[in-house]
Image 1: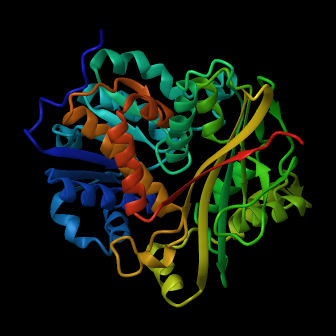
Image 2 (image 1 turned 180 degrees about the vertical axis):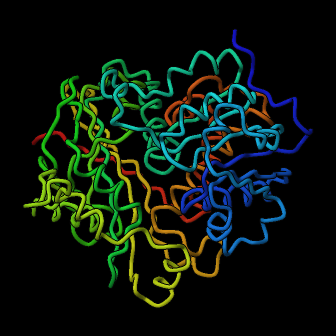
Length: 449
């Protein structure tokens, strides 16, 4: 049996978490972890490892009070730290948790570092288009599963709002349906719908525009009848009505982590899809339809593609201070992030085969509430992503540190839904609501008449 995941070689009672990178999401996650620690009376310190300390401090410009519990470590390059040659490695000696708040490319080096430091590791997303994932349809982090199990440590992967909280909520309901003792109940499909909608007088990207272009312009994939189908970008559109929205939103297939994660955890479900829509998606769609994301070169400029030119002139992500200014001055009028998963299943009811659709989801509409808070300057996407990651990670660590629970190996959101006790799962749901992320559920009969 694997050894239980305990944290015994560090100062008793104190938790030390290291962040690698600290942008819009990482700063929200750090602030939320600090608030959770204060509430639960857990001594908490941070080590923030970045290329530019001034930018990291600026990301916390409304949370300067936390600087006395943060050790900022500036590096010209992460490579020496990852290969073990950097002298700054000594400042990570007492760290129990490593957080990749930078980019998916850091996942593997941080997992290696986690083993050398005997620490847990948290990441927020995977590289869906790397060669190994494309070939195996499995996240590359799973190559470390056995090593982390042997150490009794956990690699919490794809933690955030979507993926992350979405996996947890979907997994919670699917595990409940699995355990319902209804042998005739058959889960037919899971379709996740995402809304990223912002009403503003300026073009305000909630993510890096380069990431948005790459993700939305790639050929999307769906799981249908047990097989991965590859579609054209912005094809096979659907409509979905989100709570808080007057009109249905156009939704387009998206290749995102939930697809592979849910397929691995629930291989009996033959149809799984992820869809996305909203103002930001429509902007990228317009660029795509105008051939402005084309790889073709410009006339008489063979070294420059149309896509490269568009990338060069698009506005970048706004700095936190500018985002707060937009929100305070009414440039950003309204923003809404939501995720709704429709779980379709059949069962025998009164001698008929009934089709039921259960919806589980979340909604973040209280964006203006960030004004006057330590989170002011976060985007309407980075806030729920950072807060979602913090809440999931905090309760996973509490299960290990305080209750003697075991979370070993690579662990996803739906794994947490299965492994954490009901009391812990309920606490996660309460904390999401306490941090202004509303949860919703519904059930409807979808049997054809």
